[in-house]
Length: 76
Image (tube, rainbow, N blue to C red; front, side):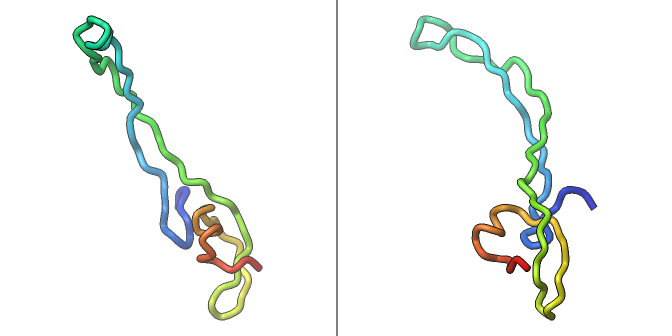
């Protein structure tokens, strides 16, 4: 299993870093053009915390900070 939240299921997604060059039309150019688009990864902010499960046992899992702030998990 990769980087994935045990509660929300958030995981790494792929995207691009877009580079634009050129002089804007407002400044007398012909506008901005996309010159390259390199791949990049968006990683979730995961924290390793001890949580209390439904049946009362304590488990150490990877949880996203969004789940921690929203109160979706109960820290042990």
